[in-house]
Image (cartoon, rainbow, N blue to C red; front, side, top):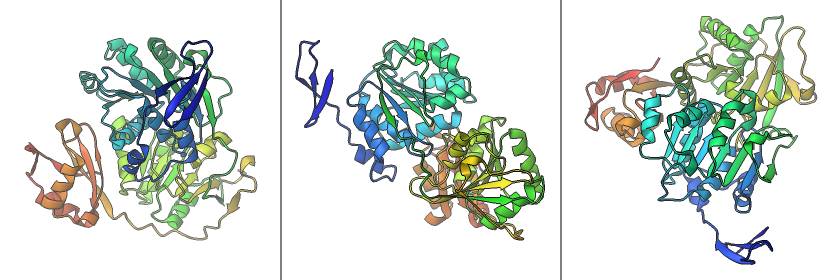
Amino acid sequence: MDFNIENGLCRISDPSIHFINSYIPLPSLDYKNLIQKLGITALNEMQQAALDTLDKAGDMLLLSPTGSGKTLGFLLPLIQLMKPDTEGVQALILVPSRELAIQIEKVFRSLGTGFKVSCCYGGHDTRTEKNNFLQSPALVVGTPGRIEHHLRLKSFDPLTVKTLILDEFDKSLELGFKTEMSAIIGELRNLSSRILTSATDLKEIPDFVNLNKPARLNYLMNTPIAGLDVKFVKAPGKEKLDTLFALMCKLGNEPTLVFCNHREAVDRISDLLREKQLTHDVFHGGMEQHEREQALIKFRNGTHHLLITTDLASRGLDIPAIKNVIHYQLPASETIFVHRNGRTARMHADGTAWLILAEGEYLPAYTAGKAQPENLKNTTALPPASAWVTLYLNVGKKEKISKGDIVGLLLQKGALNKDELGLIELMDHCSFAAVKKAKAEKVLELLKGEKLKNKSVKISLHQ
C-alpha cells in the first residue's frame, strides 16, 4: 500500500483494495499551540519526523539519545491518534520507572489537550488509581507491574486500547519486565498502533511486542553531545571523597548529579558529606517512593543543588538545568556513560561531565581524546547555602487544589513578592512550594490557621 500526503489529505493506492486512489481526511494537530505551553517554539528534527511518520505508518520504532526530547516525540503523534468523546482507555504508555511515569503525566497535562490522563505505579495508592478509572481516562501511563495488576483487577477494559507506547523499552527489558509486558500486550487485542522508543539500538525486538513493519527512525548518532565538556580529576589515593568535596567546593551552587554504581555507595558518601556539612540529597531504588519524589522536588526547586544517585537517575528524569554530571564511580559501559551524561547539556544548554579517578584507575577507552585534566588545587570553602527552602502543604490535586490557588495564598496572604516564590508541585494529597529562605518563617506565621477553598491548610517547612 502506498501513502502520499497531498494538501492535508492521505492518498491511498493499493491494487488489493477496491477504493484505489481514494482520499481520507488526515487528523489535524495544532502542535505549535501545544508546545508553546511548554515554552518551546519549534520541534527538533526527531520530533518533527516522528509526527510526520505516524501519519503514514501504523507502528513506529523511535531510537534517540537520552535527553533528546523523546517524550514530545511520541506524545504529539499520540494526541493525533486520540479521539474526543470516545469511551474507555484509548492509549497506554508503559515505562520502566515511577519517575518516568510521573514525568510523562506532567508533560501531557501541561499540553492542555482536554484528554484525561491517569498515572499508575508501585508505591502509589492503588485505591486512588482504581477510583481514577471510574471516569475512564483516555490515556494511562504506568509501570508494567502496576498495569498488569490493574488488568487482573479489571480496572479498565484492555479492548478499548488502540495505541500502545513502550517508552525506554531497552531499560524495561534490562530491569526484567519482559514477563509483565508480554502479559499486558497479550490482553491488548485491538491495537492499531504501537510506538516503541529506545535510547540504545535494538538489534532484535522480542516477538511478544508484535511490531508490524514499523517505520524506523534512528537518531542514535555516534557524535558527542553538543555543549558537553568532559573533564577528569585525580584523587591522591584510593579514596575519592576528599576529591569529590573539593570539586563541589569549586563548582559552588551549580546543579550537580553525582553518580555511583550502587545504592550502598550513595548512602556511604552521603553520610561522609554530611559530616563535612555539605548540603545535598540522595536518590536510589532503596528509598520509599515518597522519599524519592521529595528529593527530586527539592533538587528541581533549588533547595538542594547536589543529588547523589545511582543510575536510576540516568534515564527518564527531566531536570533541564543540571550543569554538572560527576562520575564518582566509573560507569560499567560506554552506554551507561552516555545515559548519565544525557542529564546535562540538554536543549542547547552547556554542561560538564566529570570523572574522578582514584589511584590505579584510568580513563575509559571511549573517553580517549575527549577528557581534559583539571587541577582542583586546595579548594575547600563550602559553597554558599541555597537561598531557597521548601514548604509542605497538606492539600493537593485530590482536594481540587490548583497551583493558582497556592500562588494566591502565598502572594496575597503570605505577603510574598513574585520573585520570592519558586517552583510549585502538586501531588495527590499534598503540595510543595519553594520560597526564599529569608521569608519562610514570616510566611508560616502569617498563614497559621488559614484555609484554602474552605479547607484547613497545615503548612510547614519541609526538612
